[in-house]
Amino acid sequence: MSSQGSTSIWLSSLFFAKGMPRVVVFVIVLLLFKQMGLGASEALCSVSLFYLPWVLKVWWKPRIASKYYRLLILTTQFLLALTFALLAFLLTSLWLTISLLVLLSWLTAIHNVAADNFARLCPLSYHHSVVQELFRKFGLIVSQGVLLVLAGNLQVFFRHDIFYSWRVLFYFLSGIYLLLFFWHVWKLTRRLRPSDNTITSPLTSIQGGYVTFFLLAYAFAQGMTGKASILFLIDTYSRGGVGLSPQEFGFVMGIVGIVGLTIGGLLGTKAITRFGLSSCLWPMVLSMMVPCIVYVALSYWQPRELIHIGSGVLLEQLSYGFGFAAYLSILKQMTRREQGKSLMALSFLLSCLVSAPLLSLLDYNAFFVLTLVLSALTPCAAFLISKVPIEK
Image (cartoon, rainbow, N blue to C red):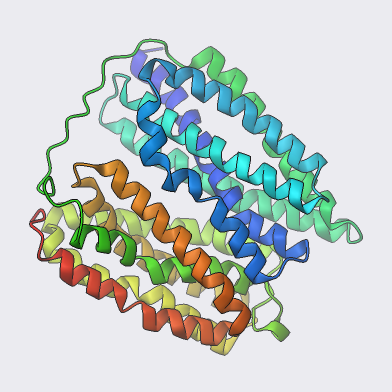
């Protein structure tokens, strides 16, 4: 097999491994917490803790030497397998579960950093970037879609023991990461080249002010909507939700939603490449408001047909993916990109924390109306960033 073909194989499995743990700590746990009896406020406050490794990454990432990337990938994959197994075994203890999820979030962040940087140190051809994104998305579909459908079906068969399905899911993930660990011990290359961290950018001298506000505010309302929408989709009709079962949620958000997000992101990237960010910025700003509008409509209507719910999720994820491409384009132009990524994580952490008390005070419809009002932050952020010299 050629070296390029061999690289495609281990690169595919490496980026497949990247996607799943992050879905667990930011999406699946909200379903788990809901079935464990936690209220929306407690669940969202707990999830906000899981953003800390990404918020603090600007400090700990530079301390990781490139010679340790391969070792860190293998170590974190083995520890992820162990942590998933412990989660399955200790699932009935809430505080142990939350503690293990905090550990899982740190392992996920370290694994993602090591995997990204390891891939950059290897001699890759252009098509590998496509491979990376496709298999990362495939990991999201498996974890957020296929595994949740499996868990939901198991809950139908074992009605008197809801924890059984979650244990099966976590043991299954443990087995996957154990296999990935042994596979990558064998397959991950040891031939690396020195990295070139030189970044040229028109945003070199502008790291604060407008750029900071943009990174914190552009997707703030959408971050609130994203977390609350998970609870809304699985909550009962009497509590203002639409009552999706875990398997229905897995299909709607894990398959339909991820496909919509992927297509939207690709369209956004292609539009910026062809027309330039300045020309695409305001259409993308308008599309970022669509998720808030969709959930205002869904929370008011509370449809019972899965096709209507799925259509709404497809539209909002497609729009979000398209609009978020502007955010990522600005981030890529920053000299101090790690600071930008930490600010992005901080924005999602704060939106999660703000959502927690609001959801305990407001019903879903009032909450989503509020997020629609707060989505005015998006055009404000875009207006300010348009004053900064960005790529045309």
